[in-house]
Image (tube, rainbow, N blue to C red; front, top):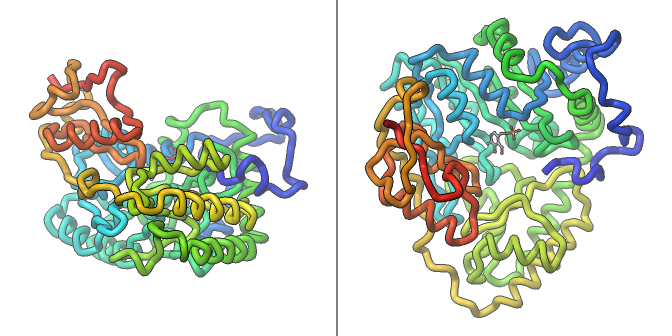
Length: 450
Ligand SMILES: Cc1ncc(COP(=O)(O)O)c(C=O)c1O
């Protein structure tokens, strides 16, 4: 990302000079916070194109849409059922709103050692046990393109009279091709938040928030969207949200068909790459797969995803989206061409022959997600005091920090959770292997609840 891939996904007629778009709320330019003219029209066109009752343009990424959604739906002290593989914006949103999370542990996909779907049965159990919860927030697709069975989650959650919010940051393209898993709006979710900039030809920070009718108080939502977003929204970002909509509405199906053909070709070209496997729906135990997300497992060529990412960049001029210990992950969008897949295929095949015969990576490094013990409620600690402590000495303490290993950007320790020795070792192993961790100071310190 960004999904326009250096502008290649944007047709010539939409290659506009950004300095000529960078305007403000002068007459004729409308106002994102009180839209009555062009922005209202553009949002209405987006709602129609994405199958929503109403769509809001976001200029601060999915992050602000997630924050506003949680603030609009929950009141301090409310419970929200949340899949624990959430992005940190979900955790910070709950903290801002003073919400108590009921975490669901997602299924673990053993073969690729990655996080899988939030299971409907687990969500139903949480709904049964927490009749006072306001609703369910799940991430779908996850970073690896794996999609939970949203239709059944929506049906069950609605049967309990609760709200479904979908962090669809990685799924803005899903609506435009029937070979892909259905979009959150199609499945009947109440709110979906999509990072247009990740999978569509839109600019960084551009995102949409879509609504299905009935359960959401739009006045409250609009109040929070307006409070959280800048009073000087970028017309460059908004213009390209409109342009991305126009491209996908007019041509999305054909462009995605072509992309899926190239991806099929790529997967086929990996057949003889010894030690390499590419994630497919057949290889996951549960859920559906967004086929545009390429997850390439490198464990059996004896190289971590981090090392392969570095080699691809330095030796082949290919930048992947992310890597983890065993995999590299590429976001493919309608801006990618067959030539891009040929380059990737050439490079990965070359790696496979170069490292042939190396022993596979040991199994020791990846673990199933462990949900830490809750030491204090988010609502209690959000105004509380904290002190710093060396992370390696913090076992047994309650964290005030969000410790997020990248990839994949899913917090290993959230505020209010008790830090275990296992979590310390897991985070340190990611650092040692070349991953990045946010939430620790430069001196390796963590904030602890006083
Ligand atoms: C699952 C998920 N949700 C939300 C976000 C936040 O999106 P944005 O960067 O558009 O604010 C991300 C960003 O990586 C993400 O991966």
